[in-house]
Length: 337
Image (cartoon, rainbow, N blue to C red; front, side):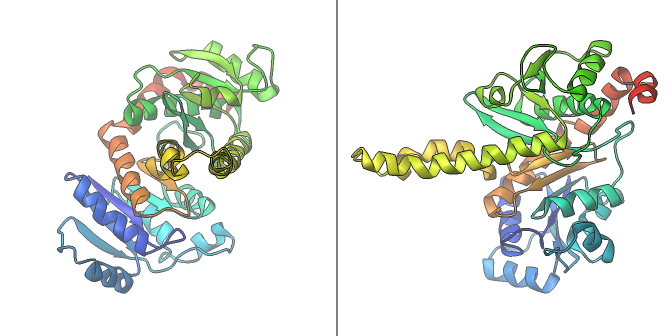
């Protein structure tokens, strides 16, 4: 399988994506990688790494990154922008997956403008992996589509259901709608309309409304919501995690705990480290499309390749299309699109 890495995206580009590509080639013998970026800079980094030349690694000339400007304008401005080049390679069928770190706006814009959507998908959604005591849950949408409709949330559930089955081995994922209460009547109009769609077009293991805390308690495997709500959930969780992780070492020291706090917290830090998951897939794109954190280092890039690899091996796209055809046919396409 052939996967392209955006070598000009993220805070540590191109060094981090190049190093991550080398780690991924060692970890996954069945992948070929393309680095979309500045050829001279990439070749210099490869030479400095001392790694042997690999026939499974090629470079695509796309030396321009996206800065602080309007991401849509930047993506439209030139075909030499690396994020756009990645999307165009996916659309052309030259790769089966994309790993891009950095500007989420640029990544979503590139996918929207230059990738195809899966047949039947109305809107793409970012499926953000969030840890809980027994594993990982996905919250979709994490911010791709702030103003969603009920049909979008129903389709998010279909898409994320198949992704978590492939990525995390959850055979029958529990699906919930993020709301302000667990009761059937709790929520806004969007929640009510989404409930009606789930009742009219059932999905396996739909458990109803879930409050945001349930995601982190392991009560649900797929939590669906509009991108505005999902992005607030994500950023609130990130902020609280940062506060807690910063406060615990101080509390341990104040309590006179003899061990090094960093060692005590090692397992917990690993569980909440975004690098362990590589990133979040933009579901609904025709192909595997992973968006990662701008601060990503080599390990995150390697794990991003691993996540894309699982998507491809799990035939997630074809499974999504098949279930959409069976579950959300023309009846609700016309009624709720």
